[in-house]
Length: 132
Image (cartoon, rainbow, N blue to C red; front, side, top):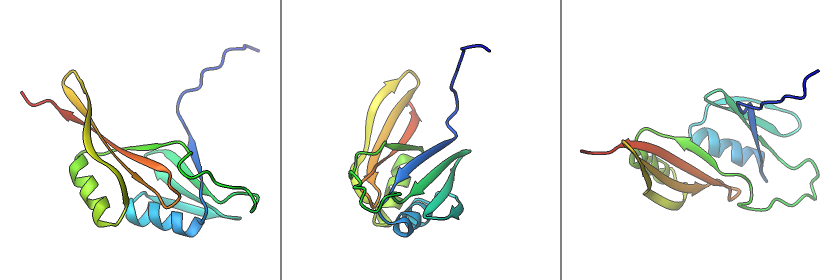
């Protein structure tokens, strides 16, 4: 048996949330992430273009969730300004408006940030062609 191991594609991302119903409504209704299914005890799954996002309440009710200390999710969008305005209209908590991060050759990388109901940071990112 070989000792070689090469991890590649991510299959699933898990986020711990305080209230599964509130978090499910946020990701499904405000962000428009395609809902897959719910499972006992308190798990909800979404489809991020082939990668599953699992939301789960803590297994131990005494477990404390550290607000904003989970990993950041970054969503690719075609028009960052439009996506940002739609989320703002849906009363999503804005952290940072669309702004230029870097020019990468023929494209500019733009990002904006907001928070989910548990304070987890979520980013929008868009690669915009550089105007000549």
